[in-house]
Image (tube, rainbow, N blue to C red; front, side, top):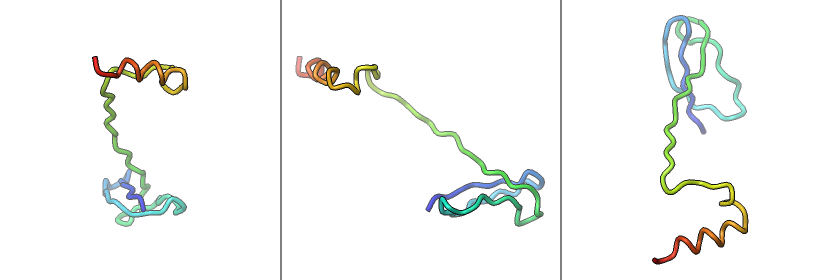
Length: 72
């Protein structure tokens, strides 16, 4: 079950709660009955390696990339 973070727009109260995907989004703060907003954190994505090319997902590109990755 995913954990969602909420923060009240009125009083600033923040909390985390477990909810299923089918549960409705919470809209009322349990502290002051103000407006709740979901808090979305930032995700860090790093790409390592030589890069990704348009032909990497095609069957013709797989044979060309495997020959360059061999022992030299």
